[in-house]
Structures are given as C-alpha cells and as structure tokens.
Length: 335
Ligand SMILES: Cc1ncc(COP(=O)(O)O)c(C=O)c1O
Image (cartoon, rainbow, N blue to C red):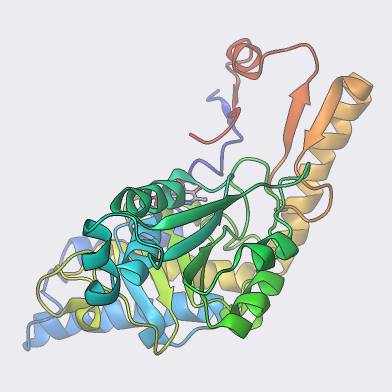
C-alpha cells in the first residue's frame, strides 16, 4: 500500500482527464502557435481555449490572462513588473540609493517566498517595504493595511489564502481600501483555486497568481491575471508572445492541461468546497476524539481553506512525529 497522501497544498496529482487532454499536444499537434499554417493554427487555438478556461474560473476576460511557468513566476511578474514599470521615476532613482520618494510596497509576514523574495529583491534595490504582522489566526487586519499606506505606496501584495494554515485573508476589504488610494493589489491565489469561489471582480484585485500544480494540472505552468489597463514591465523580454507580456514559445501541452484543470475546478464548485470541508472536519473530529485537548488547531477556525487542517500535537515535534508514521504523507509546513 502506498502512503496515504495528505499533502495537497504541496502539490496535487495530475487529474487523468487533464493528462488525456494534453496527450494530443505532446504527440500530433506539435505546431508553434505563432505559425500561420494549419499546425500553428491548431496549437494557437488550443492555447486560446486554455486562456478562456482559466479566465472563466476566476471571472476574468481571456485577454487578462498571461500564462507563466508557474506560481512563482506569476507572483514575480506581478510584483517586479509593477514596480519596475516606470524606470525614470523609479528604477533610476533606486540605483542612486534610498530616496524619500522610492516606491513603497506593503505585504505580510506570512506570504510564500514567491512573494517575500521578489519584495526583498526590490527592497535591496531601494524600494521601501512594510511587512505587516498577522493575528493569532494568521490573518492580516485591513486597518493595518490602511495605516501603512503612504503617498508613494505602489503595490499591496497579500495572499488570498495561506499555504500552511489555510487562513483566508480579507482581500476584498483590503482591495476596497487600496482602490480609494489608486494602489494596485496583487493576491497570490495559488492555494484557493478549485477549493473556494474566486472572482476577480468581486475581490477587486488587479493582479492574481495561479499555480497549475495546486489545481491538478502539471508543475511548471501557471498564469497571472492582469486587470485590463494595468501595465507591467515583462520579466522575460523577447518576441511578442502573450501580447508582449511574456516572451517565449508557449508550452502548449501544459497550457492545455491547465485549461482543462481550470474547467474541471469551475464545474466542481461549489460542491467541492463542501466535500473537502466534510472530509477535513471528519479527520479533525477523529483526532479530537482520540487526543482531546492534546491537539490544537492552527489557523482560523472558520475563515480557512476547506481542505486544510494544521494542528499541533502537544508535546511532540511535528517532523519527528511524522517520521514515525511513514504510512501518512503529510507536511509540517510549506514544502
Ligand atoms: C501560496 C503559494 N504561492 C506560490 C507558490 C509557488 O508556485 P509554483 O510552485 O508553481 O512556482 C506556492 C507553491 O509552492 C504556494 O503554495
């Protein structure tokens, strides 16, 4: 018997229908989507279908989807692309050292490294950075965001849900605050898609990260939602792929897989949310019955991803505890 897999926030298996949808693009439809002949057209149409499928999952328009090589690239593109957009007023000055009007970025202490590291990089170039704390449940207070805003704040980047404890952040409230001041909002949605309802209009965000391998698509493929009108400096300069926003011949089979996974995720909601929640709570109840107050829940009791259960086993070190039960494939935190 293989170990029971309980580590879906680290990665998901590829859904069999996703694999099936990819296979023709690994075999016969090998064309370059930029080629004008029939081979190119077949590939181009497949990429554009995938774009529509991904857009539909988050209530976006297809032209607001930029495909990337995963969630990390999407967040890097959002964060660096926003801040490096106006080299004259921003970048050049940064090389002159820290300046009082250097761009300001707000984030939280519990972001994934795919957010914290590009923010730290911009900090090293001279941007000023505010890293907000979170409360006991792992949530940021929108009032803290409001208080942190200064006239030169360019970007607020806060995750939609936390990958370790599952807490859902008050993104809608934060985006409403930022909109009043004309500040761009990026949210890393890698863990939320397919688990809870996500709609970019309802959230009011400008940029949103999608990671394929948290969604039953392969690793190494993702997307960034870029609201119409938001201008980003590309991370990868080159030919005009992705409407000039990300150069490089498209990874057609993987994009097809991402599109299929997005469509399946959209169709499975909202039932998936309830099913996951039931399973999660059943496991939690069983642990409580067995261990009583020797287990402590981490993260928000309600405002939490339906698939995420993070607990302390009192008196035990998580990693040592898990090593004693190789039949269970779980994690103590981010992979
Ligand atoms: C919250 C979050 N953001 C970003 C990423 C990075 O995505 P990727 O592994 O596709 O680069 C992950 C997963 O590792 C994640 O959990």
